[in-house]
Image (cartoon, rainbow, N blue to C red; front, side):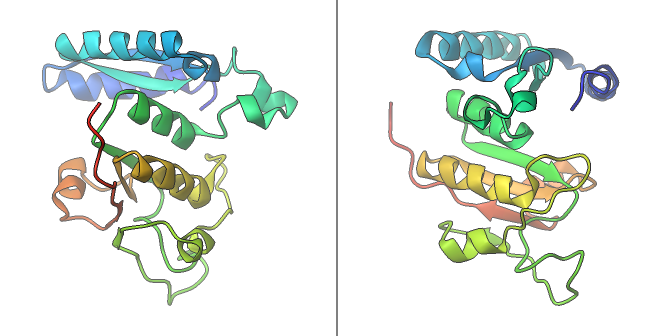
Length: 193
């Protein structure tokens, strides 16, 4: 999301969380925040401090600082918010990452082009076949498409974190309860730290 859109997005989150007596705060991150253990610990401590205060962190990439995305150095930048979400989930030792998008999850082929596309509801392991199903096509609001979501889910699964991909128009409680269409990438058993 560009700097122009961030204030409006944060206002929407803040207004909606306020209805439930929950505060929201915006945190802007770059790859530098995950470049070493000290930075990672700082991010974790800040987010945990907010959670103790019943404050939800709205996290986004700091476009003004993370200029590598525009210079072509893909090794040191986020490709999109999916990767950023994955890094935060891993850093926070989360149990679950929920990614909302413009489709109900991973389909056997592109549902926008093929009526025979079927939703893959649960994935125990991301195989080469699963990766081929993930289109690299992108909408105008996303840098990663389904391919990046599958890539992040594969990395997190190996660390014991389950990822759910679902449509952004679905209610979150229904997604989490399995009452809305979704794809669940099962995390393997977490190792105790």
